Length: 97
Image (cartoon, rainbow, N blue to C red):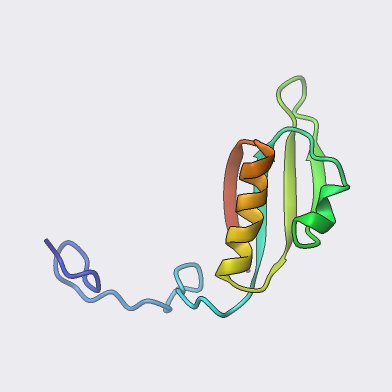
């Protein structure tokens, strides 16, 4: 088994070279979180002042995009926990550039 700081071939992994893999817990970032269903705008303030945009889905289940600045990983987990508590299905979480 490889050391956590190396890949399967033993080549060192340089965390932070790619902004999408940076593991800095105290650094904020902009995120887009997608969930199935139609969230009421009321939840924007409860979810860290995220911007909500509902996409109808053309006859399929609507999808809500939540976008906004998240101060750190703990705040991101707080948003995800709120969504879990609401019982919505998580589609994706993306860190935006």
